[in-house]
Image (tube, rainbow, N blue to C red):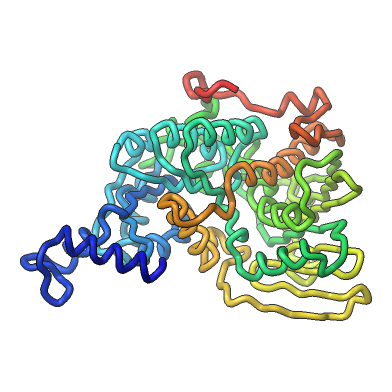
Length: 449
């Protein structure tokens, strides 16, 4: 926030509060005064989904310069709500309301914006509901559960005119922006290929069996837009990522989103011409993991540009010397970039520049967070106020997310396919059957396009 803006807010606050002594209005506590200061500019926000990711929002919400008030903490699991409230109590001096149902949160006319950190199948539908209710949305990745929802997100944003920031926070990374700008300026010549990588050491996943719904969990609301099914043990707590396609988008939606976005950004490409995938479950063959845990994907773009994905969820060998990141090859050199640094090499492989970032953004830590996320969130706040432009608008995020959906669809139909580079639609009929999903009756998107 600029000094001029701070001066403006301070003068406005003094005018609203009346005569002050020592910076605090007479008869008012410092806490009450802080509620008034900048009140016309203060954003009222809510968090929906209080799993591992919400902690990344604590810093940007608590910072005074953000000038926001956390009004609601919302989750379908009671213990998630109480735990998040206890955590936030260490950072803010007021108590947000605890709510089970996002629909009640969205019905509050004073609410300005919502963080959507729900499970994947709720991301787009929850955002549709939010913008219909007049709210801006910080939408965590993946922004959609399927490609059709991506198309609808763009349509909803245009129709309702609300700010939708996708949570691919590396778009707010200083060192990443620096090297991407240099790549676009020709520092490695013509960038023609990128390899996006991710490795993790995820262990066994419990085999799901029918079980009573855990105490405090609203299972019906957890399912939301997804067709109803019986509860299976341990589904609600993160393992929904790996138990079929009703709720999750596998590792592609979970993590590949970030690196593929950087790869596409660096190469300045949009929809691919062709997609091919080799993927399978390679580890812990008798456990409950129902999807691939290892994937190689190839995306071919116009002008013979290539993006490759090398993703291994359950083997810790770092083939490329890092557990995640993106390698960009050019006609005159190459670059490696991840959340913490970039390295620039000449055509002969000599290291030209090793730029380590001051960023403390987490890599494979569940939930993550750090100063990169903080900047991304503050960019969202300031865009709502009209003082900045989004670093990751939803129409840009949707194109990157489509790459993950193409890979998942290719895996599921067990073949490659051609893509319309103008519309992003798949030419293969079998693959297009997975373009959308079945919704629980009454939960279908309302906007027709």
